Image (cartoon, rainbow, N blue to C red; front, side, top):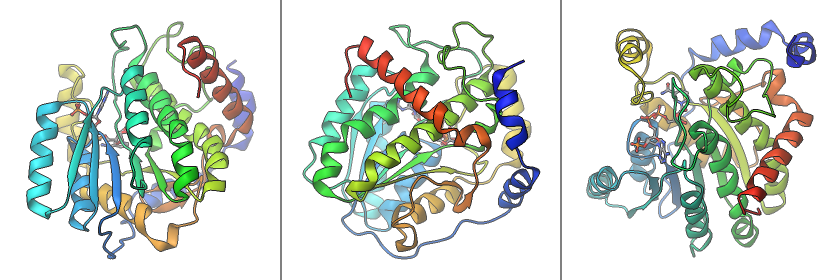
Length: 320
Ligand SMILES: NC(=O)c1ccc[n+]([C@@H]2O[C@H](COP(=O)([O-])OP(=O)(O)OC[C@H]3O[C@@H](n4cnc5c(N)ncnc54)[C@H](OP(=O)(O)O)[C@@H]3O)[C@@H](O)[C@H]2O)c1
């Protein structure tokens, strides 16, 4: 029996599942206050939720810094948003599945003069087949576990100096698919049969566990970190998967999905509303706070994961 079944089974409550289902029908809270001149950093802003969120923040006067993989798409989004909303829009090109690129982004953000008012870790992937980057690192592990952790840790000295900032993790209710927790000895799915939804769920669960640790480190600097489910929305998610997935997505998922504009409204509210200035270490369904499922509240698992990743990064020559 999976040890997680014994550990978590008794802690699951149906009321939490009903709450999630209720929250799926709710619209996000809206913040109408502008955000002029404030800096919003968004990863993966070339499409979907990241793109809509960049437009939303720009429409409220924010200075936008995107962290994107594709130069051409980035330039076209930059031009479009800057012209439409008349705000500064910049980008850094980085493949967030590559450790040197992630570190370069961390160094760049750390060197900025301006405080980072909102940092949105949005870039994410849903891969039906296991994929490695050119140096053999599993992509889901790199993008979901390592990237936000490394960047946030590298920014600690900046946050200590600036004493302001909100970090938002674009997470997913899919973390519930890792219902019996993480396999800490096989975070890159080398020993088990990989399935897209389980690996994606594990990636999102890992983000929640690491959020607890980061929240403790960030609180003394007046910086908050929260996670949110952005709704089930029509985006380019899963675009690299096969034809069967594309057919299923087009004919089923997309028909049930909302516009990513609701995700952008929620991310604007969570990043800017005075009501949320002190909120930290919370999971939101759009903008409704939700009690996390038992594996996401496991502080021992959070410590073990953090230690495991620390060891992995040390082996790669990265000390955080
Ligand atoms: N759509 C939903 O219903 C839904 C539900 C729950 C959670 N989410 C989460 O929402 C976030 C945004 O996804 P989306 O639905 O908006 O999908 P999307 O349209 O595919 O957008 C994903 C963004 O992430 C970028 N990205 C992916 N891998 C990257 C890498 N290695 N380096 C740099 N950028 C990378 C993509 O860049 P490229 O243009 O270069 O590919 C794109 O800009 C993800 O974290 C996803 O897990 C989505």
